[in-house]
Length: 381
Image (tube, rainbow, N blue to C red; front, side):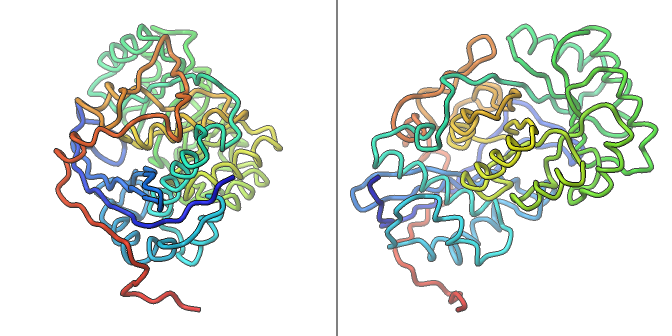
């Protein structure tokens, strides 16, 4: 494999608007600021990543702006003007910073893309992926009424999505799931609680068992694996952990405690592709199926999700809906599309999509170029 030498990193700060508001137990999102990370090697090859954080620290402790700060002042100086023999080295190179996983992942995934292009391979080839197409699920935010949710589900079932995920919260849960199941008795259906409940809701949550759900995702606290183990012992519905899993070590503890039967791997949440691979392999060893969750990404991070999902143990459809479901226009070409519930894995170099530089320039409100390893915060040791 050819090594790459990181000559420059460019941060493109952009603002994108969703086609429609997206509501979860955290709140409602209409616009999103994103930092697009462009890594440039000495031969002029660009690799691309993005911060998948929100503008507010509701999903985890990071925001888009804290991620940009960490990238500029701590993370990029660690890898700039360095020769990288393989992207898997990046995880260790950035480990001197605790957490800040989304910032790390934005930089690390860009290096993976550049490395794959340098070696004239698709990203899935470099990752060791096997699939040529991936099954796609659709995530639906909290709706104003059960009937409105049913109509949303009907629309996406008709479009061919292979899994329907419904956001729930206290006051918008049992009645909503009941309405969907009465109308669609056999569709693959799951509920996502985004940490909206506590163990005091156990008897209430157990009412979901009769609806034959694929899983309930992260019902309890965002940093918990203990209470989830208690809840899982008392529910027949599989629990899927999302926010609780930030690393291989978190996944190992959750599996050993019996806190879940499924794990959602988000590249940004766990700090990049290398850690995603490690968690994937661990779960495969323990017969824990995994799937790829979404973070309302642009086509860049969405493309990374597609390639990662080609790994063998991604056996459940992920939240990788086509670009047109979220954005009026995406920043990749061609637009990511779906055919009867499947997305074809691009076979081009790297992520397999071109960046629409005109669109990127149009929606950028700040661009920062970094080509020196001089940091205002010297790295200890």
